[in-house]
Length: 421
Ligand code: CUA
Image 1: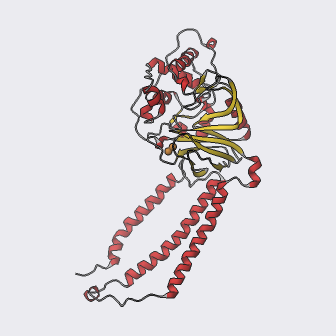
Image 2: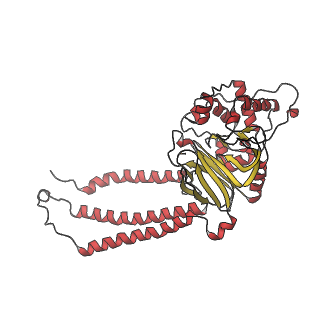
Image 3: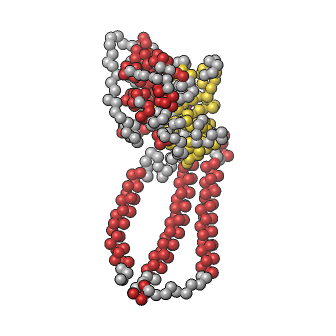
């Protein structure tokens, strides 16, 4: 038996390998700037982390090429050329070449140093806001829940009813699933969790930091300019971990202040008197369909310009129905939604689920999973267990309290939630 000449074997596979590499690189052009791509940093922390990734990549690429070339050279040069080669005795074994060994150790140490210096620099940089920027820092707190994120603004206090005493108190402004920040300013985010370990990750702004029970963690981010960023829990935390998402909306200073003012106000109330005379058309929903796993839950329109979609979301709908909204408000109470959700100024003081005072102004619901529109709110309150398996609204709310909603109830609740701009 003869060994096949390796060059003919390799030559046969070369076009296939080239095609595979080419298609991988080409497809890379499409995902490298996707909504959760770390290759498209929009802030200094993410940029520092990407630079470190590239440094590491280049160093390892050089090592790969050197070692791979030496290996290929040895394989080809010392391959078996004849039957005699195949059955030859192995050459005499000896200790080796001290010069080569020492040089290889030195080269390894050198490449580790080349990686370690930028690594330490990036670790220090991403650990905390640089001293000279601290005076301008803005403070928020993010808390992980199974399976959504709560955001609090400790320096913006809004009047609310204490869930235990029932008295009016000042409490930090609170939102859920969407973190709105001023662009261009460093943001110091305290990371907390009420249950298990979650991990807070905004790929275009900063790498992951864990939210650990009974431990205060933090990270800082800065968005270069106004934008809309996707975030994701990055630590397995239960059955709906993969759909535990959030959004970060960075706004210019004036727009951010306008947003703060709107959020500090108590819940919007649509006056009944504004209802036009005569019967109104019933709200029309898309037919409910089974929720496919990993269905994106938002439309292409929303995908095209998320920041514009967010701005449009701040305005009340033109076709809202005050009578239906009033019915929804009543149902929100009678169906016990109030025991888990807070709606400031509208009697709901629960703290187990997300704050809903201005839920209508958010672009997403259900932990950043679904686009906030009639069809999706309907889908969410109709079958929360199918959208987000195991969630507490479904298990501890609907099932434990035996909450039943008719089609008309769902219409009214959707109208009410949508009106909370
Ligand atoms: Cu929270 Cu994964």
